Structures are given as C-alpha cells and as structure tokens.
Image (cartoon, rainbow, N blue to C red):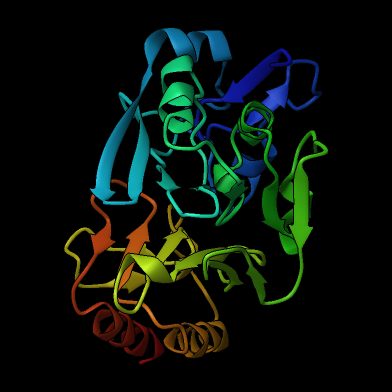
Length: 263
C-alpha cells in the first residue's frame, strides 16, 4: 500500500502527496463537507480503531461493514458464484482478517461499483486479490490514482459470468449502475448501492441526484429510470446500508415509488 490519506467523510483514499486540500468527491454537490470542514485520516489510524464485520445474508451473499460505523456507513457485498466471486462496492478498510475470510471462500474474480462514493481504497483491494475493477466510463473523472486494474466499460450492460451482469441506470451519477445476479432467487437479485435507495420503513424506493442534500432528479430522468428498471427481472433488492434490503413485493414497491415521484 502506498502512503495515503483518507477522507473521513466519504472514505476515499488519496496519495499522501496529492495536492487536494478538500476531497473532490465531497466538494461535489451530491456529497457534502462536514461542519468544521475537511477532515483526513490515515490507513494506520483506520486499522487501529476499526474492524470489518461480516454478516451472511443468503447462502452465497455476505455483507461487509466497518465497525464502528465510518464515513458514510457504506457496505460492500461478497457474492459467491461458481465461476468466480464478485465484490460489489467497497469499504475503506482492508485488513488481514477480511483478506483471509474472502480467500477462504475462493477469493475475488472482480470488483464492481455502483458509483464513485464507494471507490475508497479499491486499488488496494484489486492488488490484494489480483483482480480487475469494473467502473462505467461515464464516471471515469472520479477515479483518482487510476491503476492498471481498472477496466472501464461502456453502454447499458456489461455481462460477467454465471448470468450476472452490470447495468448502467444513471440518475445519481451518469455511470450509476446495478448488479443483477439471477441465481440468488426465482427472478434474481439486484445490488444497487445508491442507484436506488430503500427507505427505512421499506415502503419506498428513492432515486435522487443527491440523497444527503435532498436534490431530486428531473421528471424525465425518473421516467427513464422507471422504464429501464421495470424491464429487469428481480424479486430481491439490496441497497447501500445495513438492513436496507427488500425481499417481498419489490417490483410493486418500486412501481408505486416511481409513480409517486412522477405525480
């Protein structure tokens, strides 16, 4: 690992000699700077104060979280699949216990992302597991210290293996994407990060330009997302934060939510 500094608000890693006084991701109006301004931390401090918690959600799905909560409390998913495992999104802490945990389950064939708020220390993850990182080309500008393992993809879909596919939905970011895994249920599961966000009461699904700053998407963009997602078969949805999962009436909740936006 090269010497790094970490934005304590979003968890993005930067080279220690990077000239940024303010995290570019948090300075964007889809994110925010905390009261008191920019705060930085280091990998050493993160490792000494935090650990990675794993939780098995399904037979072949684990969620990975930093404990206690750090940055935007994002979670990553380890998805086990016969032809190779996928890490969906990323968390800013990579330590020996989680490395051994993943290696014991077959390692990683790829890392894939929903959007830039989760890039964190993706280069360290990719180097450790010797795997590519899939990011939609529309979000290339948010990749800092681009390494040789980043593979940019174009268009609406990028097929992986075992029927899995990355789908560019847009909205939150131009490259915002979801991962469709058909083997996890009758219709398939969707991992969506912040591309779609499940409400705490599990009765609504949000699509927004900025979630923390409460900035909506244009009416036409909501219509486009609604039409695209309706055509994807799925009956399980896993969003960005712990417990934001839907396993019943998922399409009905999505349709009602989008109609409410459009009204």
